[in-house]
Image (cartoon, rainbow, N blue to C red):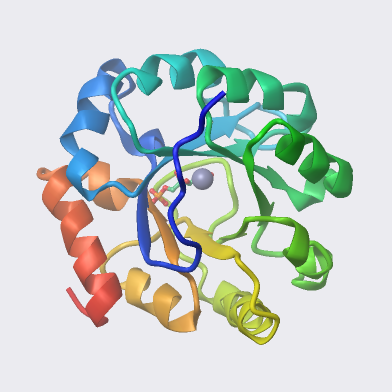
Length: 229
Ligand code: DX5
Ligand code: ZN
């Protein structure tokens, strides 16, 4: 199965989260922002790891027809291993699992064996030490800037300490690793996250709740690059 190239690690990427889009019109939402989309962020919630339910492989499969972008699937699931293959077959390019669910080493191996790009996510209150030993084995580290489960929450600035630690480790060890932030990313917080060392910016509300989502995604990119809107 072929994958869409994620591009070189470490470069600035905007990853719109479709969680904030109109689920009745997802194909249009995805096409509308395509020109400003590096990765498409797909939030999968199982109602167990997080207190909310969202979408799964059938929606990924449908959306695959409308986008040639890298599909960055964030699995907020207690048992992601049961679904990795289904996401892969549906057209996921990368899958991110949470370190809090355990079995991390085998999940990383399983996902890589399927040809997926692999991410590891940590909640805001999970210390950096829990992910540190996996940095050489993964393609992406997702440091949550809200507690997962819902869009539209406020950015937790304290997480920037972990982002800085991660960036330091990546630079010192010359790792091919993307550092992604997710939650409350907007024109004000995107430059803060980039300054701390993040290079992949997930944004839901800031893009899809705007009257002009394409322009909102563009402005986010500009703000991230220049440090201001
Ligand atoms: C939270 C999700 C995020 C969220 C981002 O559980 O992982 O991707 O939807 O949404 P905003 O940008 O609205 O915080
Ligand atoms: Zn997410």
